[in-house]
Length: 245
Length: 194
Image 1 (cartoon, rainbow over the protein chains, first blue to last red):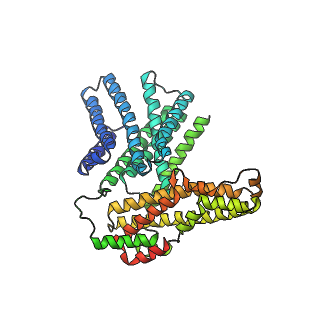
Image 2: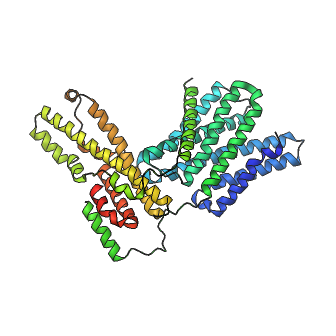
Image 3: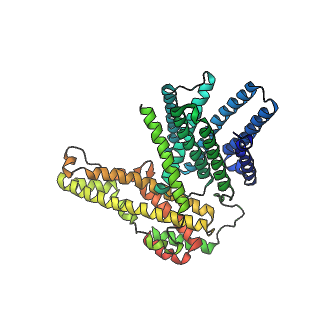
């Protein structure tokens, strides 16, 4: 695959990082910000290793797998952050705190069961990274599909940063899981199409994130600079409430 | 085998979510105009809901009626409460759409919309679980309660850790705050219809 095309997501990630910095997203969704920053650094290191030590495959191999493990951990933390943000107002209900652990356990169990049925082609610690990667993809799809399902059910607002994050991850992970399953069905002849599809899906995910973060999210906490309502407005407000009861 | 089926189901769910997302992006238009929100609301009598959920009322019915008459009365009260919960759920959807439309047009403060949305989500959650619970109980034939003990309605006050009348009252307060900012002229209608 053309090296230039292969690093299109990197340029999009750099653009996304700039948009995130402009929107001060590190204060709203810190783990997602860390994920994107990590993605930029990891891709740059991979590119540098590829260009500077082209003959030493081991260095690239190590860099690739270490960064993949980083993606796994951060991907899971971002999903935790997304769920916590969306279910924030339900934290007083005891069962809402069980949603993420339940999704996490389901994702890991299914990934382990899949690894037993279709063993990864790598061994040792790399096998655990592959299992972790599939578990993260499953968690991302469940969170995304769950949120999309809850929109018509609960009437949630679309244009929120957590939805954008979940949508990007969800679309990419759905495609990645579909391709992973097909890859194991068709074997290595499917490799080129697999690579291209994942590249396009990841680029689409990054574009979704850029689009969501391109407009500022309205502050949900009251602005302290805004003055309190006048006694007249307050009286009118209390009258309305009294009539309602 | 089960794990593979589950994995495929999750992937299919994700694919359906992607299609739904595309559909929503394609057909984005406000379902309700800001001006006609009040006309879409169904009045909810909270004092009636309170009386249906009142343990003293329940106890007095149980005391004064024969078991058969009590079962009939309880089924009627359950149907009535189901209707109230259905209206609560409908109103919460209408108000969320109102909040979203107002927020998209930059007409309302985000804090007010957020308050309205959170209150509406609680009402939706409560009404979803309460309706499911009531429907299952109403599906059972009246005679079944001779064997299975008849559930008391006061227990329906708290479902999924949410107090029904209280959450709806919070929604009304949030809606009043939003209307105060946007359509003070329609407050009278909101008071009547919510």
